[in-house]
Amino acid sequence: MNWYEALIGTGSALLRTMVIGVGAYIALVTVLRLSGKRTLSKWSAFDLVVTVALGSAFANALVSKDVSLVQGIVTFAVLASLQFVVTWASVRSSWLRRLSRSQPQLLLLNGKLQHDAMRQERVTENELRASLRSQGIADVSSVGAVVLETDGRMSVIRVLGSPEESTLQDVRGMGAGAVAGERKHVTS
Image 1 (cartoon, rainbow, N blue to C red):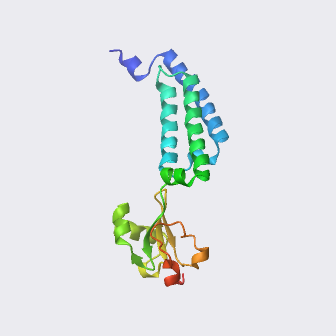
Image 2: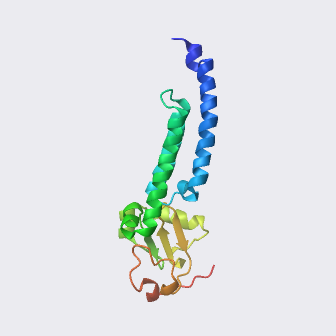
Image 3: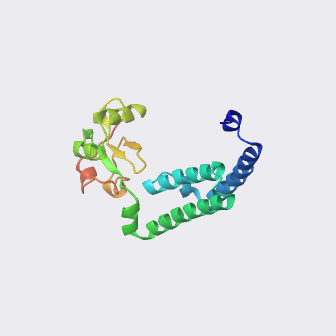
């Protein structure tokens, strides 16, 4: 085995990596700019898969001798196009939206942990409390709601408003009258 070539590579391999790297980078940035902001968002599992797949395609184009620059560019375009089509269609079809997107889940309401929902979403009390601490909240009972968002973040709602104007309307676990039942005002 030639250790120098294994560690450093050949001059032609290094040159290929540089040329393909610059071309693939320019192509990827161009495709991402043309496809819009949603392509790199992490709003759903599908968006995350596309983001990871773009990175994998970039790496393959960069280091694999079996993948040409044009193949890499076509891969970028196909992935970005699929992501665009799915998001475009999901805005227009509730069936596809339910299929491609998860729904936010209520984990805490009016200071009370929603244990069934937490178990279903595999969220521990310690994780929820850590999320509250990161928001500067020391008293669980002073919180209006905690929602596990579709991207895995936890949103902390300090004060519950009127049900008609509530941002919690699309949250799973917010039954009719949950907000109206006990309007909690928190001083913070």
